[in-house]
View 1 (spheres, rainbow, N blue to C red):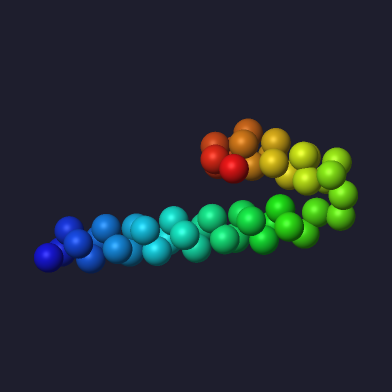
View 2: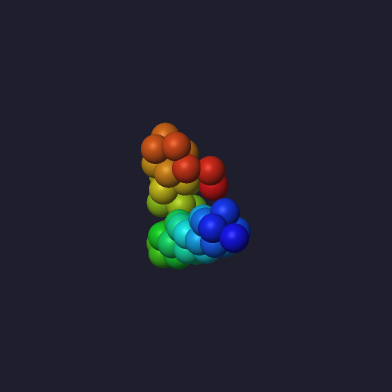
Length: 48
């Protein structure tokens, strides 16, 4: 039972983090800034 709760919380946090990254990328003013943000996220270990 405890493992299921941990799994659900983990999935929830993962989805929340993905939404945060997508919002950050969506705020780009142009394609150049978008590419810079993608590279920045990737260099910090995030999968985009």
